[in-house]
Image 1 (tube, rainbow, N blue to C red):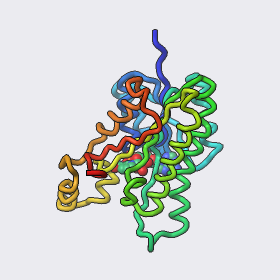
Image 2 (cartoon, protein in one colour):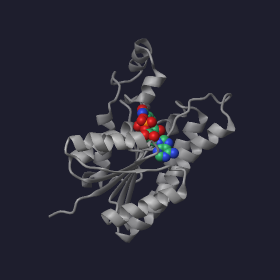
Image 3 (cartoon, protein in one colour):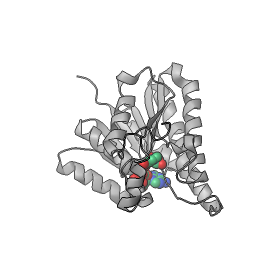
Image 4 (cartoon, rainbow, N blue to C red):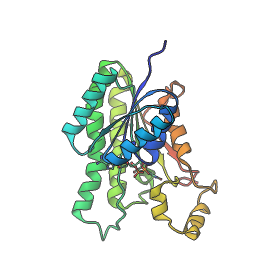
Length: 248
Ligand code: NAD
């Protein structure tokens, strides 16, 4: 019998990460997810249990190295290895450059970039030990366009892009597969906050070449593809999930 894959989703209690957790739990993988939001994490475990599905949750602050290392160690102890890491934890504090304060800059870089670095730093030795592993980072189209979320957000996501490329260039030949999914205009709470009225949303839709907003299934499908063998020749890439919004 084929071994169950162990999938770790960091930032899995809401939005893009949560949809992926639900998708993999429904397929019967060993799903472990972490999040700062304990209540939301436990609620998701209960929601899955009601459907006869299972997932393991750890409360986690990605900005805390000891916390990250401790969780990775626990996961390895319990599940033997980590086949796939999906890093979805992130924050957006929309501020103009003029309004941007040093604490907001530091916090955004700390969660979106340093938190990602800690996770990758902790997981790579384990993946190398098992001669392979798959890392999928949820980045953002703002690393490419510089728009949406402000200078601090674009800088943090640009950093995630550089980190992804650097790891790909260093470890591809040792079996580490790493790619980045860059969502834009996906129906999430973040989008609701940015476009609160029907009128503002319709204006946005008219700017998207495919004339619709993306769904969480669109990001989950992309993550599933990058986590699968079908994409094994795709390495160090950015996959924009944006309905053509960025380049058309
Ligand atoms: P979300 O807010 O729904 O989910 C993010 C999760 O990260 C939350 O559950 C939150 O509790 C968790 N988190 C925040 N700080 C944390 C910390 N310090 N430690 C651990 N967990 C923490 O957001 P989302 O829309 O699902 O976005 C997921 C990722 O995708 C983010 O990195 C975001 O920047 C990126 N993204 C989203 C969109 C979009 O359209 N929603 C677009 C571009 C990029």
